[in-house]
Image 1: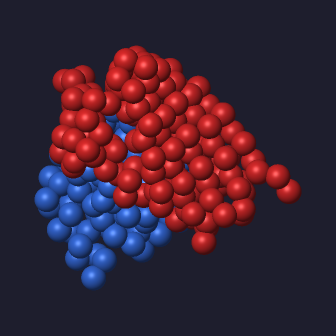
Image 2: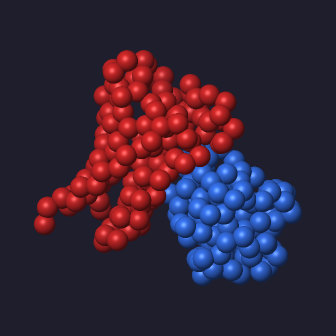
Amino acid sequence: MTVSELANILALQSFCLPEPGREVTGGYVGDLLSWVMGRAKAGDAWLTIMSNQNVAAVALMTDAACVVLTEDVRPDEALLRRAQQQSINLLGTKRSSFDTAAALKDLLR
Amino acid sequence: MGDLKLTYQVDGGDLLQAGEASSQMKMALKKLDLPPEVIRKASICMYEGEINMVIHADGGHVEVTVGMDAITIRLVDQGPGIPDVDKAMEEGFTTAGDVARDLGFGAGMGLPNMKRYSDEMEIDTTVGVGTTVTMRIHIA
């Protein structure tokens, strides 16, 4: 499943989608950035409520397929700018992290 | 062909801006014919090191050497040094302040992550003088 397909199926809001064809192979939920750095895998859709610009850096370093800001969190201006600069797929949803993760898990089955 | 050497300055103070050096390194590594997982490991190691430098040492510099067998990342700072390296290596132990924590850092995972994703890691630190962390990530 590509990021673009994921966005369509879950009706995610697209803040920045420079690489819609990236393959989503897993998921990770976390807001402590160092924890995410340690545990997230390449190709994960990363669900978080953090919205500062370090989110883009963590997504870049971990090779996350995309970031999904949950709970109706919106990226601050700096995050949006950095995501654009660094070609990070940045999506959003009103759903909770729990509901989004559950839906993602179903899709990946 | 000789080793490729890259040098980056890391400014202290602004944690929001941290990651610039790591991002640049990742872009540079991506242009080389290296396995993605090697680039990923090197990027995580470097980023955690960069964050540590900003939080604890008011910045420093990083020397990256890409050789045939390994990527070597040497983080050099003139910060306060690490009084108890064994303690600092424990997951969950942190001396980071509230600002770092509010941004999602300071979980006490930085050094453990660097250890986890590097194949070799050496910490040379003197309290009041500074810290040099050298990490090697093997290529294939």
